[in-house]
Each structure stands twice: as C-alpha cells, then as structure tokens.
Length: 306
Image 1: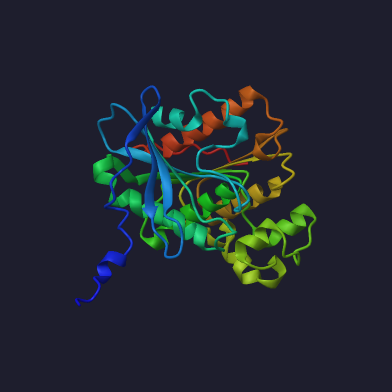
Image 2: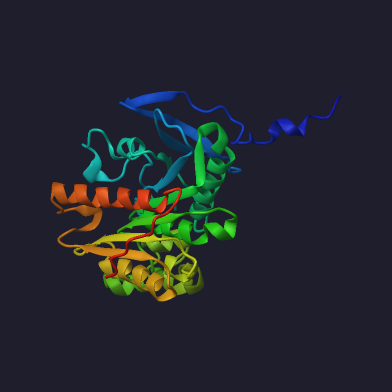
C-alpha cells in the first residue's frame, strides 16, 4: 500500500483560499464577509471581514479595526454599542471615505494568552500584504484602530509591526489600557487577583508575572520611531481610567513620537454618557486622522498636544 500523502493533512494557505462572495450592505460598499486569514493548529480558522468601496482607481489605504470586549468577548462586526443603530454603519462610512476596512477576529483569553492576540493581528496584516494586488490595497498605508481591549491591541500592533516586517502608518486608540502594571492602582484593585481580565490576558495575576504584564503593555514598546497616534479617552471612564490614555500619550511624547491626545469630557467607557453629536465628532475626528496619516504625499500632521 502506498504511504498516505501527508500533504493532504496540511492546513490550507489562507493567501490562496478563494475569497468570499461580495455582499452589498450599503450603497457604494462591498463586504467580503468571513475571509480566512490564518489557520492555527488545533484551533478554528481565523476570519476577517473586509469592507471595500466601489469605483476606486488607485490602491486603497487600509484600516485594521480591532474590536473590544475585555480580551475575552466581543465581535468583529461592530464598533461598539453606541454605533449599533447608525445607518449606514461606521464601517460602511469608512469604506465610503476611500478605505479598505479589515475587521479581524482574534483568539480570546479563554482560548489563548498573550501574545496570541497580537500574533493573530500580525497575521492579518500579513494576509492583507499577500493579497494586496488582487484586492487593490496599499498595505504601506495602514492605520490600526481599536476600542477598549481592541485599542490596547491596536496600539501593540502599531508599535511592534516593524519588528515583524510590517508597517503601520498610524494608530487610533479609543479608551484602551496601555500600562497593565499600573492598572490596579488606577482602578483601586488587587494586583494579586488572578480573576481580572488583565490576569486572563497574560495567564497569571499581574503581581505574579510582572515581566509578562510589562510586555503586554503598549507603553513598554514605545520608541521615537512610533507612527502617529490619536488617543481619545473618556474623562469619566470607570472601567479603563483616563490615566491609562494619558500614560500612553506621555510615553509617545517623551520618546519624540507624534501623538494627539484628548480626554473627552463627560464620557465613560464605550462613550457612555456622550451626546450623539459629540459621538459623531469623535468618529469624524478619528476618520480624519486616518485620512491624514495615509495620504500618498503627506502634507504634515497637525498635532494638538495636551
């Protein structure tokens, strides 16, 4: 009997898999829902949704959006609960502004600990590079954008992408943790508690694994070569105190990296308590930042240091 062909057991190459058929969720927008971007041994295939504008002529800049949920929950399908009733939705608006928008799922803390989540998002960047030609993308003009835990991961991705042979041109962080060792003091919680979201992320209580907690903190990876950052944080955030956003902005500023930071008055986590018109302003400013940092011939980056 001939030996079993081992090649049949190898996982498929996501860069060669057929793309999903295009949906039309809004006028002028195509959606490729559920494209497999990575296959991890012993784990379900990882997928992303890719929102694309119609009628474009040049390679598209890219927004990689990273969802929140405390690293243990959440979905790539939404920007957060305050945006659920937007019509058209926020991802469609980003696509209409001329972006390809990749919304990636990643392994949650019930499935794997840090740095698995960052590894997954780096793989998503690699998939976008590999398929840039057929999808008309310019991966050199990529902005990472995340909210809450996704803001933390977007910051880590932007700050470490160069070490992985990728490039991120800018980063938008909405109310994301940035300094895990300092988080218990900011919240008034016990760093020896193994039941926190942060402990689940690193696989141990923060007090028991300080090196791991530091490695999982964006502030530990800041250099003068960091891309431009826009950090927006609710001044009244009760889940991720605004001090976390301030620490990230300070670390970037101290390193000589471009950063714009705003503490949004009256806003709690997830932009709770923020009036609708001010929520619109937060989204618009973030999209403008993404456009400014991905221009083919940058005309400068306007900073408003805090």
